[in-house]
Image (cartoon, rainbow, N blue to C red):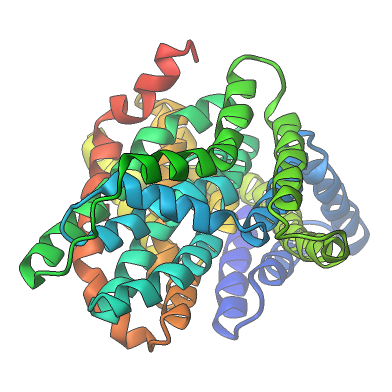
Length: 431
């Protein structure tokens, strides 16, 4: 009977996705269909309702709407331009300096907003016209912007890592945040290396060196925005507040900053809060639906079956991690990162822990892997937004993205097979 329920779950879920039913609805329908094969209707409804309530009953999840609101305030608060000016100073006179500015801008703004889409739109919207004016190929500019946009999903504070913490059974959010710094920076550096090589070959112009006075003023202008990272992450590490409380602090700080910059007015707040509610509702629906599916999978033994299948391929951790990475890369091309983390963490985490992989290390690997799906066809959200901002068709940007894909996957493999990249900072700080 458990086997039948598992088959029903899989077949109905794939069928729902094939006919373009929203993924959260697909999860609920497939889960209910599977439950009904083993329980009567009244018990099925009761069980589903119970799992929804327990799945959402989490203090940690409160951080999600707060970080979303903080990101939206950041996106509306005139902060992107200050971060871009700061990034220009950092890259100096490197070949393709505007492209490097775009990458650094995405890393800074993406980490503050926690959204690859927001970074691609805000930074790309400013940098695209500037690069076009300097003679950069618009397709190359769009590729740089798109490739570096997801760095903010790994560099903290990251809402995705909070979701992983919840579904992995309480992995330390602070440890995950700290672990994300080096992999996220490596992603950005990989994009900069590719951009440097292409810019050098095409002889793209170099920005003029700014005076010390201008550089100092630019840095001072950016300090209030950069301080949010110090306050949020520093507060968590110092034990002043939890990750959830840090999210609330981030909202208060970002609101004050946006008002001070006169980029957000009180009359804008209803619209901003409504946008926050809409995004939060989508995520919470996914969490609730995935709670039902997780119970069904555990009941039917699907994680054990998949584990046995993967372990049957090889007993080498190197091969197993490669198989998991390939599966997640494929999965990320058509599934959003949040449901993928919710559904597949309970399946893969026990496998990797069986040969000694730390949950923190696996979380960074998994989130980084699935973040690549944000910039790959057919459904990459940052890919679509980046192409739209550049006023290009999707086909125009995929080919220029290929060398960036290669560089990012190399970084993913380094993160996968060299645990110290993710673990050195958490260990130094005692996690």
